[in-house]
Image (tube, rainbow, N blue to C red; front, side, top):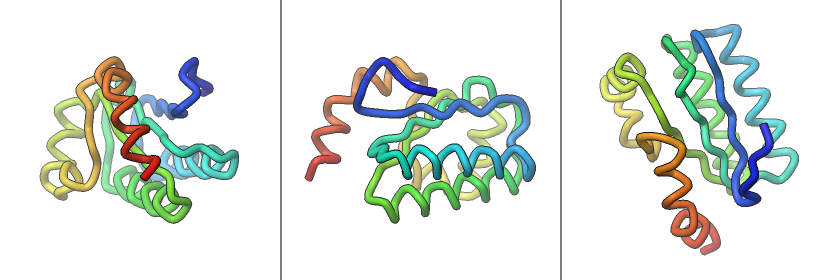
Length: 116
C-alpha cells in the first residue's frame, strides 16, 4: 500500500465494504497511523457497494485519524457510495476528490494546510 509520493499513504478497499471488510479496512488505517502516516487517501475506485456498517467503519477510521492529528481524504467514489454519503451528510465531513490524480494535483496545498 506504499505510495511513490512520500507525503501520503493509500488504502484501496475493493468489492463490497461491509462489516467483515470494514473491520479489515479499519485495521489498515490504524496500522498506517501507528507507522506515523499524516495523510491517508482512501481510494474507492474498486469498491462496488458500501452498506451502513462499511460507512460506520469509515467513520471510526476518521476518528482514529483525527485523534492522531492526521488527515484522511477520499477519492473515486461510485454513484451508490456518493448517494450514501449525501444521505448521511458524510460528503460534508470528508473531502472527496474525483480521482487519485486530482488528489495528487492538490497534494502540495494539502500538505501545506496540514503543516499548520
